[in-house]
Length: 236
Image (cartoon, rainbow, N blue to C red; front, side, top):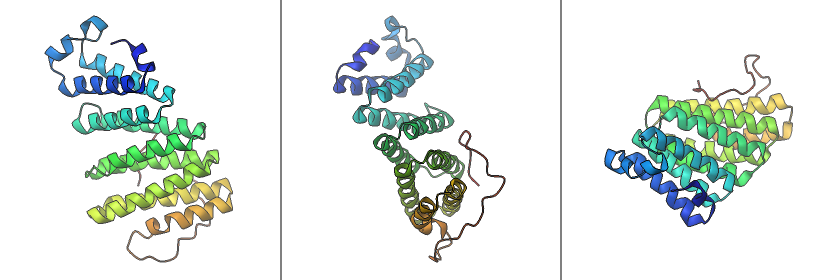
């Protein structure tokens, strides 16, 4: 199972990701033993190898392979094999990387996979942490002037707003409103009136989290406590 296999054909890349994911999900000593000749003897070894495959997937630029890795990453997180905090850190990193490269296709792929994962969660603390990642990506995209990425995130907030409302996740919907307000504040700080108006128009429904679909909120100033983006943290 040489890593060079990963760079040959799409089918082999996807198969290798699936193979390593399967070993991590199984975790049995018998199955692990089959790979000792490759220097992989423990679950930790396979975990590190899996994350390296993720880096190779993004380096390949193949959207199908990247999507396969992200789906596998979230599956492992859902099973408890991968720590949720590790997953959020990875998504934050990959998202900022796509913002830096102004790669809207990659950015939307990351956001789409992430939102699918978020929609499968029910626990408020986990959901709030995920919204912290979206807040960080929003600040990164607005600071970089990545308008396509900003509007992609606006659409994500609208989708999550509908989901939280349908599922009765009112606390998470409130926190989502905080993310929307933060996006407007970031746009105000940037001094881009056009972008600010587009963000307000796009997140107007999210801002009305109490069910009153009144006109979008006016934001006149940015709180002095709002600092530059750092690592993702819970919102609210």
